[in-house]
Image (cartoon, rainbow, N blue to C red; front, side, top):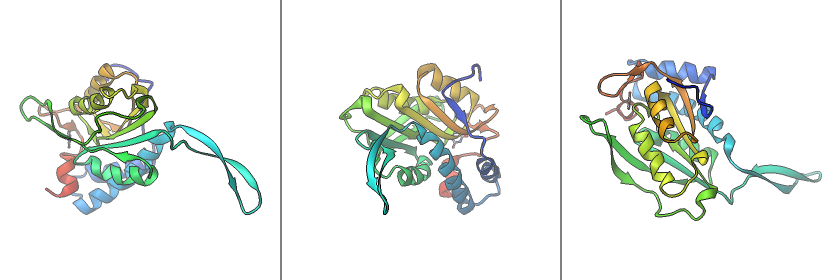
Length: 218
Ligand code: URA
């Protein structure tokens, strides 16, 4: 990585580290792989959602009325899982932000050019209030940054502010982080780990292999 980025958060949680070790192991079976992925995503996700807008309201406890802080659900919250592995993260994301909308994004990587090719886009044509829209892109492997940037671009094209876009990954490569921040310096990026580099076909090293295949037993 060339730079220190203010908007980059790397988890230092021991549960994340422990479960990453499990899913990196090539002998871990899909059932254990998915269970570990869910544990990691719960921790990373609760860190990612710290930027949600808050407001206050009154509630009656059994003893008295009091003012409480709650998420301002008049804002629009978008969870955007990048297929396929983003789906596992989206279960937890939706559990934590049950009022969010889920817009799936399908991007695959052309094996030769390594460029992202869109094949599914469930985004609306426009957002009611793009300035007040908070987007959480779930893409567990930030490798070249090509599909990550393409996913972010879908939202900035609709007027969503970079500062309200959070990219959530499990493992990132230094190259992917540099590429994404070069194009979108104001987004937030949260990851479970930063690995060493990429191989010549764009896989993260040491990484965990193909996250989709390992999750879905394909
Ligand atoms: N996608 C994966 O599933 N694994 C990688 O290492 C890179 C991209």
